[in-house]
Image 1 (cartoon, rainbow, N blue to C red):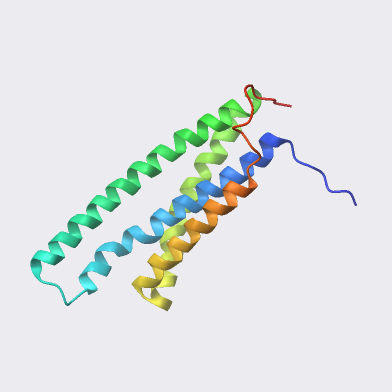
Image 2: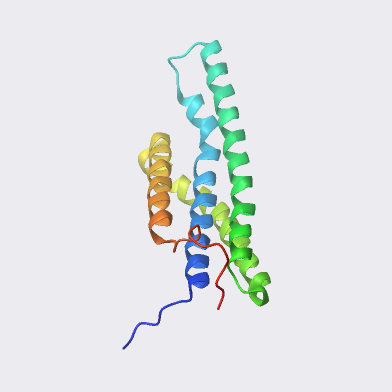
Length: 152
């Protein structure tokens, strides 16, 4: 049986959909456990714990900003390189992927923390994001080499 090649816009939609799912999941994997992880650290003074708490808050803020910036960028790419008649469906897939990641993240994070501890959540999230970065970089068909979109 012959394998059917997806149009470029559909292939990129699938890659970006999975990317949004993984990013949403990664964000929600670590956020519930940051405060618990800091509380677990017993060898620090009150000042040091306050400093770590401030850094965690700053990291949460920066991750939230980057997460908020990701969705419009992906939406722009999908708008530019997808047929106009599918834009509603494409946007709904994109939004659904991110929100499904936000739902599955705490469930998977709690399983990982129960098995490997809080540090396991941070390590697995870092590995997941790195693998996702390499996969998206390798799997997206180049969008940046064209001047005008070729939509079929």
